[in-house]
Length: 437
Ligand SMILES: *Cc1c(COP(=O)(O)O)cnc(C)c1O
Image (tube, protein in one colour):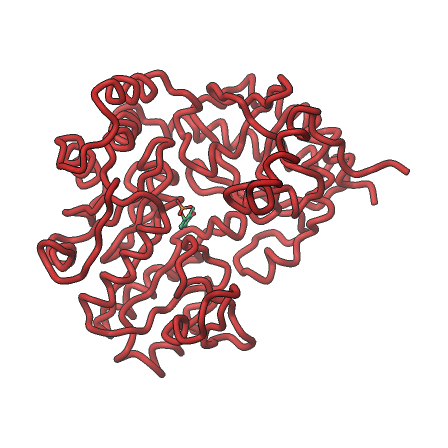
């Protein structure tokens, strides 16, 4: 019997077995397992530019980019030097540094809706703080979120949609008590009517809406025309806060975020991933008025021993400055267009139904006959088996995608024409494998 995937190299295999002895599932984040595609994960050693290298000496063209941060390419020399210089001065002080202000000023200058910033250590902390801030500032409890949107492992946002267009949340994980999600309303992404229904019923109790302005944790699904504008309108009408979770989209789809790309202004923005240039940094931003609700200026409590960490700030500053000054997005644009057109053509040649979508420097590959994917159910209906065969063949050919049909792909400025030609050459046998049953 032929198998769908070749095992990783012996060193990866041995490291994974050791890891499983001391860490649940052998990994520190479930997205790193190969559970959705079969097989066991490849362990990495180093990365440079568009390439990542495993512990067995294999090189892969990388479209994961650490799940988003590495828009400049891996081991960007300026960013690495900034971190090295800062590390030599001591790792952490627990006292303010000018670096924090410098990164906050950069964020403020780049993202229109942000006047004031709180630094945290992850995207999860950023969305946690954003929700607490919306509740604290409005004095209300209910939060609207969307099925298929992911905001980190935040208890009240770890909910599944029940049946029906608008549902009360049910806990999405053991360990999340029903009481914790009792104030979470789950609506349907790209379906404004489901949000209107939530407001019609609970409008005066809704503190805010949290939304991924481009859904990037159910592959890559852009907002349909009028959706984000409609959310803005509802929040204005009912005095609720509009939270854009731009942990993925911030600096990724546009230097000024999805809010600039789609020209819709949120009240609160959660950032992560690129803002730390590959270091663990998150940030929450908004108007001065709303941000001043946070302690110590205001009474909404939030704190962090390592928040505004000097190494994270140094990496974030070096990365955002380059995005601001070097028109990184304009450089990526023609390359990502060429990559997706080439993939669609090779899929068609192999008789594989494939639809691609992109916003800025993120993209999605959907193994589906649908022309456009706007709803979570359409994403869920894609052919995950075909994806798994495609994934494993690409991996063997030296191209690394996220090991799940539901993750977005990320392109960096290091993915030049040569890299794309190599990717497209690897895609031919991969689509042939996807076509086989
Ligand atoms: C990655 C992600 C998060 C969580 O960020 P972590 O740094 O993993 O905690 C939150 N929201 C969105 C949209 C994300 O893509």
